[in-house]
Length: 360
Length: 256
Image 1: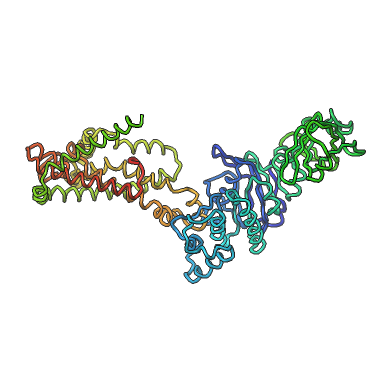
Image 2 (image 1 turned 30 degrees about the horizontal axis):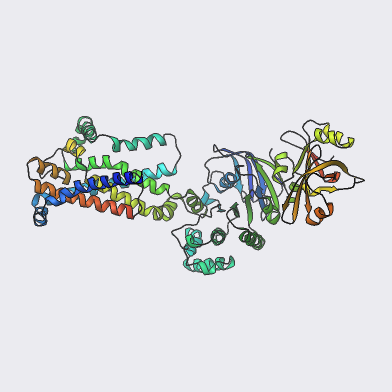
């Protein structure tokens, strides 16, 4: 599935047009994507989806992919990386171990033959902004993961790239450092207005940072939209799984165990009904409305403040309950419960690559 | 098990030390100094230094870009080229000398002579033989040094504005410097100790093609064992020094 440019009237900062490349283990297949100037796009996909390859193609690190790439309106498909004006921050930061933090940050400025006075002013300024001013004399190999990440960011941003490409920037960081980096990335994007393409396999980062999200699976771009759209209305079964829509019921199976109204949904071959686990309610008394199933609690998994409850209702149902909701339910594995599904929160995917979404 | 393995290791170390030590022990210190400054040994040292400087310089000059190509570019025939460059290392020494003789004598001899350059049985030939036999080490050690640099660093440098040459100069060369230096030392040391191919290709003529290994051979042949032992000790000292330096610089490739 390819997605058409979102707005033909506005020249996007990055336009990826029908890019295909086969690197053996990783492929991209006819990926088309626009990113407007100043937008923060998160490319979400599982490991091996081709996310890094997409960034590398935009950065010019692969020779001759099929298709076209435009940056700032210029066709850069065959331009070398150094001519594209694209900043790239790889997963392992790529800091130069033989250069000090100062020289790492200054690298791009020196390559642009910036006068020493400019380097001496801009490097400390960028370092201060990223909270690493005291590290300038250090060797990057002595820094923590979070500090290395900031140095790499400062190095990429100090040359004011038209586009900043971030490859799983949170990948190797602990939870506390991630939280700090998320707010830093948000602030920097707000301050500088740089167009950002950030790839990740963690959908939490989508909600924290993305203005828009594109979902890449097996080298194909399956969906693009706002985080809310993709989260609530996944256009493809693989997208639904990726955004943790835990309940994906073949419509035939749902019709077998549920009210006859659902049979309408089952009329199309291969239709799948999606329902987010937080939209499933469990009760002891039979609810008066909604789609109601009766079943038995199979498993309860505490996940911090949330309980994940699996119910066997002829079909497998997963519900996420708050601690209070679970206490109110007063049930344990083996107990009978009613499953209430609000029809407005369900979503139907019909088979094939170009799934359409709808409701029961 | 542990004792048996350690015993084997001790036996091997003792054997190497016995072989090396016998040469050192054979020449009394006073005789060694006198022999070292004899006209013949000084000639052999000078010729060895001159020929190895040329052969090592050429091997590194061509070997570094060749190793860069093997390390950085993906192209059809890369694996074949890689294997072919290993051949001089595994070629029997006599066969290398004979093959060089055929190429520079039988096939190209007249052509080269027409341009005033005779290679077989000359001091130039010594450098050519050394270059041929040592180029594998040059390419291998430099490639190992370049391969050890994460490709990501080079990618990032490109996106920060460096062209390919600037990336080589500002990132690869500083990071691979020790490896390249170690490779240069090992290439030079190997060229310095080369005997078989030189013997076949250039012959063993006293005070003419007499590099240090040839000197050992010539002096042994005429029973002048003190001079032979002195030349051997010099070669051993250089080999030991090179090995220590190679390890200290963190060199990799054939020897690590």
